[in-house]
Image (tube, rainbow, N blue to C red):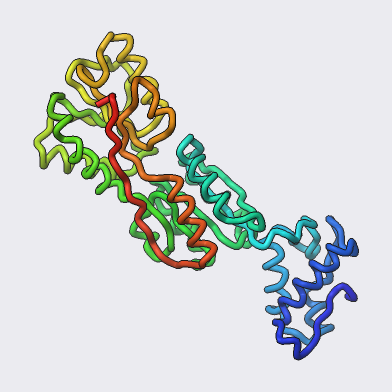
Length: 332
């Protein structure tokens, strides 16, 4: 118990003195990875503290990855890296080039003393649930991309509300949480409206929409645009057995299918930007170059990452809409 030192009238909360004592013991080499810590009840009894005070100290160290709890055995040193002041749980749906931009800008804006662990649920509700349940209490903050999964609120509610930030796509049942999001319905309508003059040389606007991955609000915004402008349109779920034709323009939300349609256009010897058009979602450096440039409707993912980091660092419990813009290039 000599590891822990608590003094009265220091002006430092007692839970913080427990944290400081353990950090000091790690730095001095008294405690090493794998060593067992004094029990919560032992600390409580020795220093006449409440059990909650000792637990608060251990939970902070646990969230920072310094301490781990083993059921029925107690608390142990998990890491000797006391320089990590906070840990962030970052749950993406999947990894792609623009989310990598978001991740890198988020990471670089947080600072070196904050550790970010990234996970992926791949649009699988069971995986989503397991990753969150397995990490309750292990992090200071939880940044969660729910995508279009249903009933995520039932899982997220297990976390402290003030520790949760919703990213990219949000839903009415998650309205109580802070976050930064895209307004897919508004963005797709605005993007298509801004390029309406260019769209008029095409006869049919075709949205590739995969129900399991794409936001429903994107589909809603697309339908509303076509209704208002009376634009002839189609909604398809795949390019299988489809042959692109003259005067069609395709709206492609994902990069894999963008490559597939470009390949089919080449096979049909169609001229991109005049005989057939493409609008892609989410801008990347590659889209500036491929085929003379691909037109995109895109939010600024670097800006999203920077702003998310600021919200965490400043403890801002707010909701922010990340603006999307149309970037016109050769493909339209």
